[in-house]
Length: 157
Image (cartoon, rainbow, N blue to C red; front, top):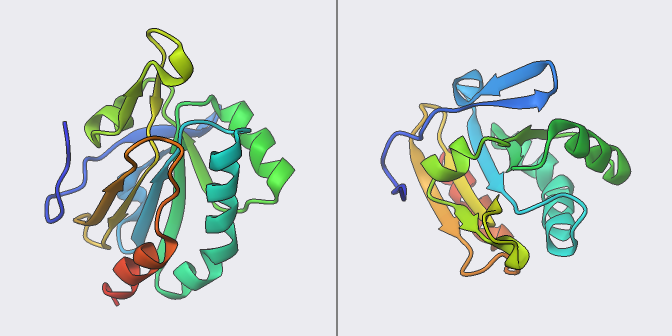
């Protein structure tokens, strides 16, 4: 199911670590840059997540929290964060609930029949939980327009 700008963002509860879960509602009062990506330890995903890491201070200054979401398990995300010095939150959607709710499920990634990953997508959600920007890549190899993400968040201030 696709989402549209102006609608309430679908809520979710996902694992940040094996024993800690986070819900979208935990971020109420802050803008959220929800960055879906296919998988940790892959080329374009590493480039994108590090590009967001390098912009996190600018987005934080605009009252925005960056949250990465992928179907990888939490222990893989912990290792990836440590390897790349990323301080923002990553959430594991191993059940694929969020990728389906946001319309960004990508079936058969890498030619693996039945494997559903997250497509590369960015959703900006305002402090009240309303979708204000939503971009989905034509294919997972395409990075988002980082200036457009910044502009979408800046427009919320």
